[in-house]
Length: 288
Image (cartoon, rainbow, N blue to C red; front, side, top):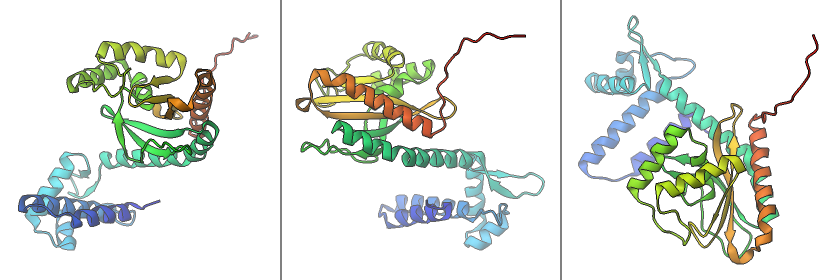
């Protein structure tokens, strides 16, 4: 696992390799300085003053002040009014939680995804929702000779993929409506013969998914199928989705119940690994 310091070094190194115009070079230099400031904070020295930062990084004090003010405004840093010392802000804590959660999902899910791909002879994806798109955190490609050319980090539309529909369906109602409205403004691209064409059509499909526990897309994003099921964390929130995808010419209609069962089972196994306990209501008699 990358340390924060190593992560910032990687980011700064990548930034340093990018060639842009003079304006872009100035912007990149500014970002690099901001990252260098964040790298200063550690367990051994969690607080820094403006003068210390300017001296150690050899940055003009007015430049350092502007950078610190921006980082504070965006909640990446906090400044103690009495001591005038800076420390890391809540935004970085949030980002650290996101990274930790994502790494945990990837680690716990991978053996289950591999087993599912082997059982179904299908490509298996682990995806999360970013905006109106699904982003794949892990992919186990199909052993069959017609791969789907997916890769980790690939973005696909949410409205015509198994992972995407699951993630949309389990959003809070207000957020779900907002996302559908955004999709309507962007326009529904007819990737396949069964791709939805209106927000109303999509909403009607999404209503069924929490009840049945899965999403089934056939000939929506490509000529083939995609079956998605939700992954829950320990709080009971849906934080990701698993899908199995493949070409229709490898399938028979009678295969779908087994496929759906296996995908749901895999998603439940990952959820349990993340600490999720399914809520079951037992009717008991209480004796006083």
